[in-house]
Image 1: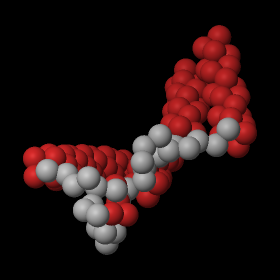
Image 2: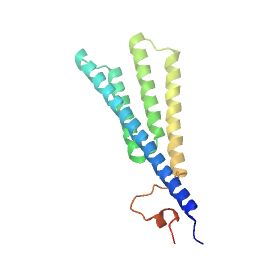
Image 3: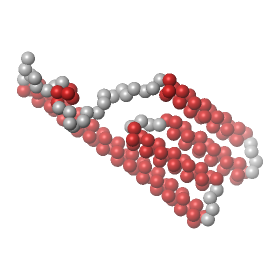
Image 4: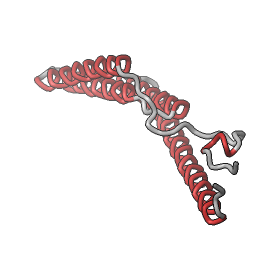
Length: 164
């Protein structure tokens, strides 16, 4: 049975709207990734230049650079794979808590109960990494979205809406 012109027009309109929507979403996605990456790199350079101007680098400064490095790696992985690496967020949290604990001890010169709380939080985050790694190995994710279509596929192979 041959489709009438209204159904063909409707199908073409839906395909055009889907393509345009995907283009706009991907453009925003890439723009946001480049902005986040650029801001992370800028903040790392400013922190490094502050260390150079100061003439020394404390352990706080070095750990701050590690945080920027982990954020940059996370953006790079997300850019390449379109998946948010949750483990990197946990690594950033562990590094930030370590920086907080070292800063607190070095400035106050006396450990207190806060050190135990921060150490417990770091241990809890380390266990969370183990759980996430185990879960991702045991239950690998499958994409919940259809794979992207390439422009070189003929219309029949893309969605079965071609004329027969």
